[in-house]
Image (cartoon, rainbow, N blue to C red; front, side, top):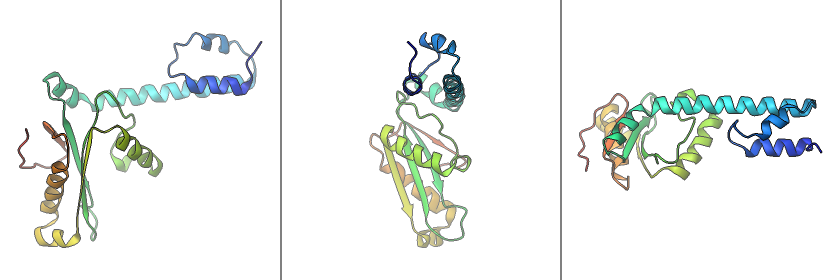
Length: 178
């Protein structure tokens, strides 16, 4: 007896790879709804494979470091260096190597919805998160570059555990690591 379309949908949503033998059985189902659901499933698997591949590419530095017994790797970035007014915000994050977050990318390359989804996933899966916000007055006092560095150092100071290595885009920080 054939599964109902709703059962096929629930089944396809529950599996995470294309190796399940039941997919061969479903592929022989001629119903239009089943064909449509199978196409959507295969598209989802293709997107996931692309995300996994991109994740592996992006983690080349981390994988190299982990091979050298460096496990606490903090990524640091800032927002607010471009605007004419407003604070500078910096964040430092140590991700859990055993809980990958697929889809991470430069925030400017993500949609608002993707940023929101990743924000929640990072909060859930990160080993540690440090955040710093410096007001416009501090920027006026020391300049935007120095305020950015101060915010990054402050964010790093909030990490627990402490990082062994830092990944920073385009800036050098004068900090001591354990």
